[in-house]
Length: 119
Image 1 (cartoon, rainbow, N blue to C red):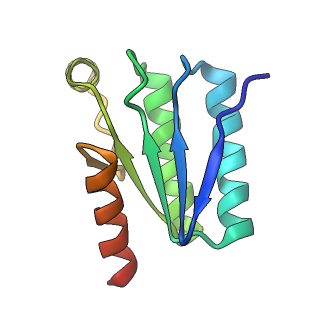
Image 2: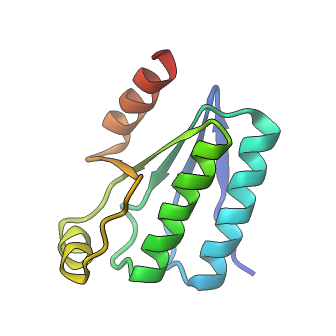
C-alpha cells in the first residue's frame, strides 16, 4: 500500500502529498498522522496539497477529520498549496473544510503555525 511520508520538524509535522490520493491512502494518512502527533507531541501539522490536481468530497472530509483529530490531540493543522481550480471545485461542491485553516503556500502556513504555537 502506498503511504505518504510524515516529516518531523521541531514542534511540527510536515506532510507533502505528491501522489494521487485515493480513499485507502487518505485513511492510512489519517491513522499515521494522529499516531505521529501522539508520539512526538507535535504542536502543528502542515499539509501541502500543491501536488494534487483534484480533491473530491471524500478526501476533503478526511482532511477535515484530520484537522479535528489533530486539535483534539492539541495540534493545529494548516492546509497549504491548494490550486485555484481545486478551490473552485470544492466551493462548487459545497465543501467548506470546516475547522481547517488554509494558507497560500508553505512559508505562510509555517508562519501561521508558529504564531499559533506562540499564542
